[in-house]
Image 1 (cartoon, rainbow, N blue to C red):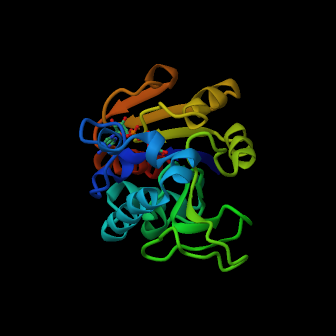
Image 2 (image 1 turned 45 degrees about the horizontal axis):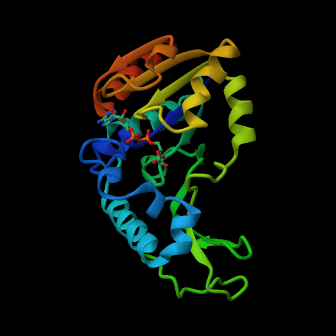
Length: 231
Ligand code: APR
């Protein structure tokens, strides 16, 4: 049984029509990170932040999984592989493709969180500042998204799984945002083989044992076919 930990980023959903962050037409060209992706930005202008994530939630709902998401679900279904997908993405395309073992380390567009009492519930289609928390009744609802200066979810489990893996694969991420950008070094220090599949060379390409460049919808199914053929 090969234990594979897979980190995914915005690049795996790009061919499903979901915009990445750091491309020349990426989300961070149009929006200032400090305005829409920090607790301070939310405190300053919650209506703006809700509008931003409401639009992204609508875009995610309209998108469909692509062959890269589907191939990862196929690998997970194979009895010879134990697969954990750790995604930085806040869409639900891995789940809709059939992946079951998924950690959303940066949260999810489909969750709501009360910043007064930490209660969590499914996000409505559109969230607004006047929405009340079903737990405590306060007007303190926010998207369940991990913003800059906040701690990603399930880090202890992720590091544990990474250190026990046979193979770490990073797909469609620019390697700019920590702690995810450091997973390749964590894995390498434990002797775990590392592979990168990305459209172009990323900030961390040098650190991988192997780095392949190309679109995820081609590279990921190709790599999964190699794995399944190699049993
Ligand atoms: N196939 C494979 N890779 C692709 C494709 C594609 N079709 N299209 C783009 N890419 C690659 C780009 O070359 C880039 O290296 O995906 C990467 C996307 O990088 P970013 O936009 O920086 O996205 P990501 O790495 O997921 O960002 C990390 O930053 O703003 C935060 O919280 C946000 O989770 C996000 C985090």
